[in-house]
Image (tube, rainbow, N blue to C red):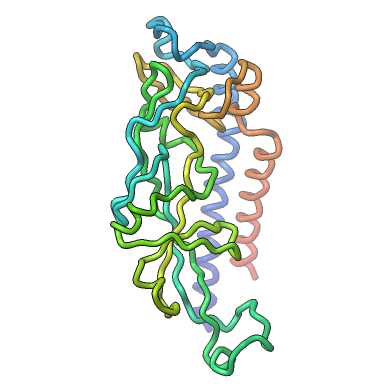
Length: 274
């Protein structure tokens, strides 16, 4: 009992520390980072990516409009698959027996009622991996690529490449991700506990697509601009629209970050004193 109290208080202290960290980070974002980003965007140079790159813009924040080109696809070393996306991340689900299933009892077999129901659960996401790309005459730096948002679930699998790597596309509309792949030897039998399957989150940009980007010009490279909410956007956007879509976080996001950190601190104090 005493050990549990110590563990509880230690958890409370950890929550307070985490909450303070996020609170300080939120204040820094609101009062330091955002003003700097807004000032940089105010002076940002709007350029056409197809034009000759002006050396005078080096070190400046630029808003670039042009044609996106994927010059090297993202590659997943674990599964040995290529993706025609500049940035992807895999998520793994495992088949487990669970007694807290959403399946209705009347639909369960006697074994399911006794031992549990086999269901996919526990999605574990890998670190994102990236390819290479460019916008017009600008090559995209690694830090710029690392900031590109993953906004779609990958579905454009090359069936031949999957088969060669030992995987099969198995869609499942009962899950929001829908587009899964799994080892081919699983698809020839009923699923067993500890079977696995994967889905991929990806950046939604294709070669030939017109895009607008916000970054810092460094010679012929477009680097990450700190504080930007969305550094790569679809379609040709004018200056004002690009800043509106890709600029600093809105007031709602700022309030949410402050409130969340305060709730962590409060929760930690409650664990310590109760």
